[in-house]
Image 1 (cartoon, rainbow, N blue to C red):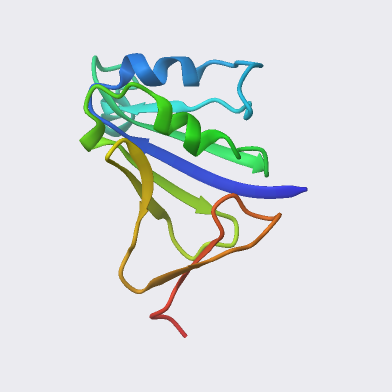
Image 2: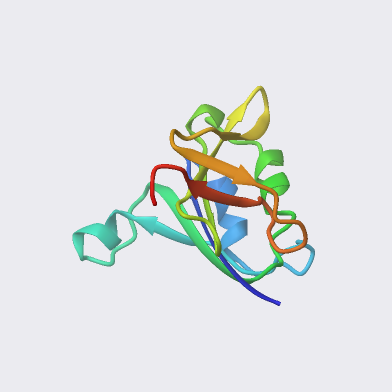
Length: 132
């Protein structure tokens, strides 16, 4: 089954934590690798900076079921800075997850509604309620 999903992870001082997720690992439930997005991508130099606060990944199949639980389990140096943005194929916009009390939970966004989409989505479908 082909299902696209994009995930963006934003976190401070997390280079060491996210490093292994930029490398292949057959022991993970999901197999794609994150790509770090650092200052060099924005200023055009393509030089790696010492700090990276963003990582991106695109899934081309519905094979990322363990991703949110895996991210939640990581020993983040600054858990209050962790934001995970997810846009599944049928979503109108990115959904936002943040760590609260040690759990990665979805933050309700104004003018959106999430509905289950069993078997075809990991998170359900997020739609905007302010559009025709």
